[in-house]
Image (cartoon, rainbow, N blue to C red; front, side, top):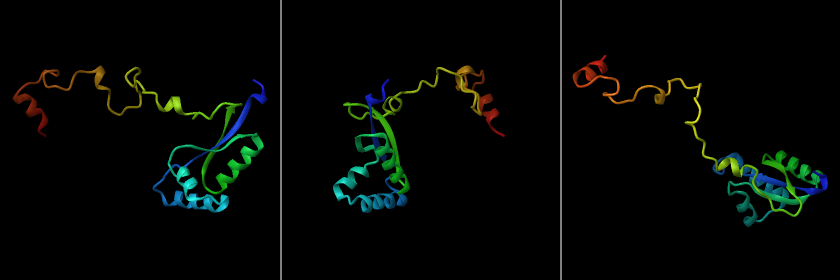
Length: 136
Protein backbone atom coordinates (compact mmCIF):
# COMPACT_ATOMS: atom_id res chain seq x y z
CA UNK A 1 0.00 0.00 0.00
CA UNK A 2 1.19 3.43 -0.86
CA UNK A 3 1.41 6.20 1.75
CA UNK A 4 -0.53 8.49 -0.59
CA UNK A 5 -3.59 6.24 -0.28
CA UNK A 6 -4.22 7.31 3.32
CA UNK A 7 -5.40 10.36 5.17
CA UNK A 8 -5.68 10.60 8.91
CA UNK A 9 -8.56 11.40 11.24
CA UNK A 10 -8.39 12.45 14.89
CA UNK A 11 -11.11 10.87 17.01
CA UNK A 12 -12.23 12.13 20.43
CA UNK A 13 -14.09 9.84 22.83
CA UNK A 14 -15.90 11.22 25.87
CA UNK A 15 -15.60 8.10 28.02
CA UNK A 16 -17.49 8.90 31.26
CA UNK A 17 -20.24 11.50 30.77
CA UNK A 18 -21.33 11.49 34.45
CA UNK A 19 -17.85 11.99 35.87
CA UNK A 20 -16.70 15.37 37.26
CA UNK A 21 -13.23 14.85 35.78
CA UNK A 22 -14.70 14.47 32.29
CA UNK A 23 -16.70 17.69 32.76
CA UNK A 24 -13.44 19.46 33.52
CA UNK A 25 -11.89 18.00 30.37
CA UNK A 26 -14.78 19.33 28.28
CA UNK A 27 -14.43 22.74 29.93
CA UNK A 28 -10.69 22.81 29.10
CA UNK A 29 -11.45 21.87 25.48
CA UNK A 30 -14.14 24.57 25.27
CA UNK A 31 -11.73 27.24 26.52
CA UNK A 32 -8.78 26.09 24.40
CA UNK A 33 -10.69 25.86 21.10
CA UNK A 34 -13.36 28.51 21.87
CA UNK A 35 -16.27 26.14 21.19
CA UNK A 36 -19.93 27.03 21.44
CA UNK A 37 -22.58 24.97 23.25
CA UNK A 38 -23.71 23.01 20.16
CA UNK A 39 -20.24 21.70 19.39
CA UNK A 40 -19.67 20.84 23.03
CA UNK A 41 -22.87 18.78 23.20
CA UNK A 42 -21.70 16.81 20.17
CA UNK A 43 -18.45 16.02 21.97
CA UNK A 44 -20.27 15.12 25.20
CA UNK A 45 -22.44 12.37 23.63
CA UNK A 46 -20.24 9.51 24.79
CA UNK A 47 -19.58 8.06 21.34
CA UNK A 48 -16.39 8.53 19.30
CA UNK A 49 -16.49 11.82 17.39
CA UNK A 50 -14.21 12.83 14.53
CA UNK A 51 -12.70 16.20 15.42
CA UNK A 52 -10.34 16.46 12.43
CA UNK A 53 -10.83 14.82 9.04
CA UNK A 54 -8.56 14.39 6.04
CA UNK A 55 -5.38 15.68 7.63
CA UNK A 56 -1.76 14.78 7.32
CA UNK A 57 -0.06 12.62 9.93
CA UNK A 58 1.94 15.41 11.58
CA UNK A 59 -1.12 17.64 12.02
CA UNK A 60 -3.18 14.75 13.35
CA UNK A 61 -0.48 13.69 15.84
CA UNK A 62 -0.11 17.27 17.13
CA UNK A 63 -3.86 17.60 17.67
CA UNK A 64 -3.99 14.22 19.41
CA UNK A 65 -1.13 15.24 21.68
CA UNK A 66 -2.88 18.52 22.52
CA UNK A 67 -6.16 16.74 23.35
CA UNK A 68 -4.30 14.21 25.49
CA UNK A 69 -2.58 17.05 27.38
CA UNK A 70 -6.03 18.50 28.13
CA UNK A 71 -7.00 15.13 29.64
CA UNK A 72 -9.10 13.81 26.77
CA UNK A 73 -9.10 10.35 25.21
CA UNK A 74 -8.13 10.80 21.55
CA UNK A 75 -6.44 8.74 18.87
CA UNK A 76 -5.34 8.98 15.25
CA UNK A 77 -6.78 6.57 12.74
CA UNK A 78 -5.89 5.89 9.11
CA UNK A 79 -8.63 6.53 6.58
CA UNK A 80 -8.48 5.71 2.88
CA UNK A 81 -8.23 8.88 0.82
CA UNK A 82 -11.72 10.06 -0.17
CA UNK A 83 -13.49 7.61 2.14
CA UNK A 84 -15.50 8.50 5.22
CA UNK A 85 -14.44 7.59 8.74
CA UNK A 86 -15.55 4.18 9.97
CA UNK A 87 -15.23 3.14 13.61
CA UNK A 88 -12.36 0.70 13.91
CA UNK A 89 -14.19 -1.25 16.63
CA UNK A 90 -17.54 -1.53 14.84
CA UNK A 91 -17.23 -5.18 13.85
CA UNK A 92 -15.88 -6.31 17.23
CA UNK A 93 -18.59 -4.48 19.17
CA UNK A 94 -21.38 -6.25 17.34
CA UNK A 95 -19.97 -9.75 17.58
CA UNK A 96 -21.91 -12.09 19.81
CA UNK A 97 -19.42 -14.38 21.50
CA UNK A 98 -20.29 -18.06 21.49
CA UNK A 99 -19.09 -19.01 24.93
CA UNK A 100 -20.24 -22.59 24.58
CA UNK A 101 -17.81 -23.36 21.77
CA UNK A 102 -14.77 -23.79 24.02
CA UNK A 103 -14.01 -24.99 27.51
CA UNK A 104 -13.16 -22.17 29.90
CA UNK A 105 -10.31 -23.24 32.17
CA UNK A 106 -10.49 -20.18 34.40
CA UNK A 107 -13.74 -21.08 36.14
CA UNK A 108 -13.69 -21.63 39.88
CA UNK A 109 -16.71 -23.94 39.62
CA UNK A 110 -16.70 -26.69 36.99
CA UNK A 111 -19.05 -26.16 34.10
CA UNK A 112 -22.43 -27.78 34.54
CA UNK A 113 -22.83 -28.75 30.92
CA UNK A 114 -20.19 -31.47 31.27
CA UNK A 115 -21.65 -32.88 34.48
CA UNK A 116 -25.12 -33.94 35.50
CA UNK A 117 -28.08 -31.64 35.59
CA UNK A 118 -29.30 -29.52 38.47
CA UNK A 119 -32.53 -31.35 39.13
CA UNK A 120 -32.94 -33.77 42.00
CA UNK A 121 -33.84 -36.54 39.60
CA UNK A 122 -30.61 -36.06 37.64
CA UNK A 123 -28.43 -36.81 40.66
CA UNK A 124 -30.59 -39.72 41.82
CA UNK A 125 -31.97 -38.20 45.02
CA UNK A 126 -35.70 -37.80 45.44
CA UNK A 127 -38.09 -36.87 48.19
CA UNK A 128 -36.89 -36.76 51.80
CA UNK A 129 -33.30 -37.81 51.05
CA UNK A 130 -32.81 -34.63 49.00
CA UNK A 131 -33.89 -32.34 51.81
CA UNK A 132 -31.90 -34.33 54.41
CA UNK A 133 -28.77 -33.77 52.32
CA UNK A 134 -29.26 -30.00 52.25
CA UNK A 135 -29.55 -29.55 56.02
CA UNK A 136 -26.21 -29.08 57.78
